[in-house]
Image: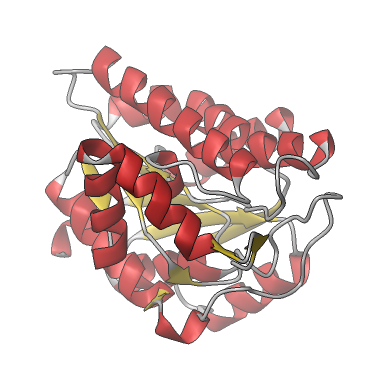
Length: 268
């Protein structure tokens, strides 16, 4: 992993979960890291944990295109370029289609899809100059629509499709585009997930202790970036879901229903 020394890495949503783990591991590998988030206190705490390392933080909302462009420009001016962009900022949701508000769906799409578009467009020229890497942190929900997560699945399908189109446009150019699907990972994403009224649900319906840790997940992502893999799907459940949905879609419908519902009620 020594090839990351002095590389300039941008990670959106780096104050929590997988993003925070990525920040710490890239810094340990000698990279220069820039990250952003909406919570100033969490960013300040993150900064205090790495006082002597090259860590640049800025408070912003990735749904604001102008703020994203300012962030990318600031990184370029500070360090002279960009080698890796990891679009990690994201939010989930939990509500049935019959109950969910349009506001919830729009918020999820704005953060997960448009946030990635804004930062990638702003950083693309610099990354092309360095023959760098663009990463989208997607989800198994980008391969298989998940009940109760219709907006989340839609945003991840859109993300995968957009990045695949970009990857094809840049084919043979030296600039690498990839997306990673962590599967169920222990992080704050389910606590912060929006309910039907676009409010944070505040608790996780899943067994977080049985999931892959954010730190382990970050390690897999960094390894995949080093190898310039096309995609990365993590966890046995995640790989099984993608396989089943591709080759046995009707069976996958039944298994997904049985996993998320009990007596006709959404329980996860």
